[in-house]
Length: 96
Image 1 (cartoon, rainbow, N blue to C red):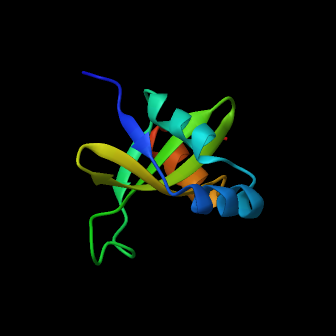
Image 2 (cartoon, helix red, strand yellow; image 1 turned 135 degrees about the vertical axis):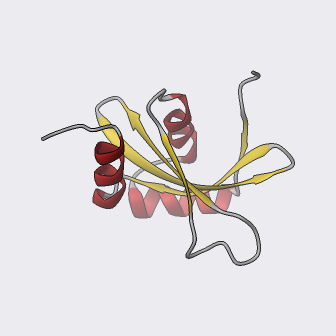
């Protein structure tokens, strides 16, 4: 399988870095985690299907919101959110 291709809106990337302290360049790394969780985003999937990727970068769990466009992963948002961490730990049966 080929490595996935990524794209994003650079203005959203700048806003995301300011607001959530994480860049979309960094967010790509969540997809490398072999234990990543992919879930459909039912709240924001009106026009196109949207998804969440919950993955580990270093020792932190990141949530990445994304969609697929022409076999490219388009990152929409990313951050280190408690809810994403809880889902990741539950699905991977990590006990704290």
